[in-house]
Image (cartoon, rainbow, N blue to C red; front, side, top):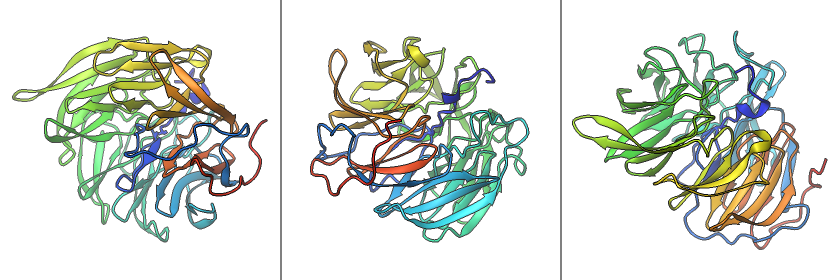
Length: 425
């Protein structure tokens, strides 16, 4: 991992990461999560002025890669301030601070800070709780209205979680009355905490935690916690932590960043570095087993997030200058097309359009076709490195880099004038 370039902390986000395309009934998120097309058509502009979509507001924010979560008129993210990590709640309409909760937390022994000290993981909104995980594994559950601490755990010093070298990046996920976090280590690969008071409901799995945020998937009529751990993807019962299935896949580091994507009731897409991509079919007999339907090394998720539209997955594949925008049939593994000219990006699908935010802070609006992308507009809106997934709420896109957070209006009829000039440096 010490040879990993700076964007290797895509965290999903980056978890990471999440990227999120929020709907009123889907408020979580995920540091390295899967973008989702919103249901229903949005009245979006099909082109932008030279400087990009109008800014509704912009404000300074400290460093960090934590994703942005929106709930009605408030948004939540995290940043670092000296020796402290800060959870911040902002007014979604103005960017003004509603509340902040800061706590002292420095990187743990064995963690690499050459690429920053995070925080990396996106917060999770779950039934009146705001749950966060910091760079060194300090987990908080807060009141989203006030920032009051309801309960907390230290995943490293208290629970003995494995060292996640570039910082904890997987967001927690909600299941029933629990919040599940990837802790890592023998017998505690994942741990479920009671949502109300934080006591441990179960801990299980003998795998080391990695960077990808897990997901709850409905497979053969049963709920599965699907987690891309350090050297395998696993499926577990989210109610007990019992292992249901596993599939070994190891990239060159070894760590995995990009979240798994559910294609169908029994089909899961995974992608990582040099090991490439797989289509995994879950077969249920007396027990679950995994059948590899297809594999390819031509599509490699080193960084960013992919978007599923119908049977096609879109995302940037490859490494640094060799990256390409790719379209792959998730059922067959057929490469529909690969085109150059796109940096490593997060991809959000909105109806028939794709919005790409690359690691240099360029935002692109494009339509996928049979042979590639038709680019409608492109603008530099952030400073590099811009590794945090964008969050779409209605027609407003929230983005951030290491200096500021910005709200952009993507609607056809812009609601307000731009707030400040774009970043062109």
